[in-house]
Length: 288
Image (cartoon, rainbow, N blue to C red; front, side, top):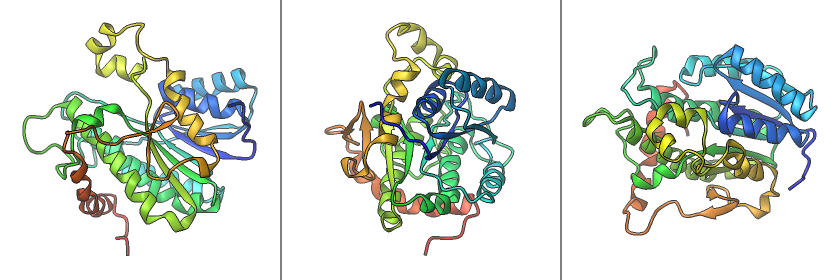
């Protein structure tokens, strides 16, 4: 896979640790210009200089943005768009598993704000720059195998029933897979492809913090962040004719989105009303 992608501009969200960091490093080592979108300027700077020294690639940039805030995403995308740079690859990697119900300053449940609303707003607002890179543009969203356990439901902020962070995370990840499918359908004429993927269970700082007992139980048995990022980097490098837009990938191969007998398949019909909802929450114009 030693394919080089000089001259390609790649944006990776949540790039200062874990799979995001490994993805940014993997793309940088192949010559891409990488924009690392991180919430913390300090951690982002440390990660950036580490990637620069490991890869010898000077074309790495830090963009500070809090993915839990639609307003922050809007100011980042508008700032970034003013340079008119074509975006060849957008990796929606930033993710959160917060066990308790925490509400953001904008009034949204935090897991949903980062995993779903942030991912949606970031992608939609960067569409004009992705179009500039067509027909080679692609959006890769890092989902999780946890999504297999739940159907797509319209209770996006877990307002019904007792809040459960791990279940909310799985629900968010199911939304990402259904959104990827929807995007590939809506924007297929624009020369942009959309893929979602499951990195496998990797030993990342996020997993250690949000699932400490899982992390301890499987210490040494989980994947490294690099192994988790492998399919993301692979999806960024493959010729598009070898990939299926809208599909879900695992270990460099297309994987099913639903387990047999799990009755989640029909649930994807709810995505249309979810998209309407997300657009209104993010104050984006309705789709025609």
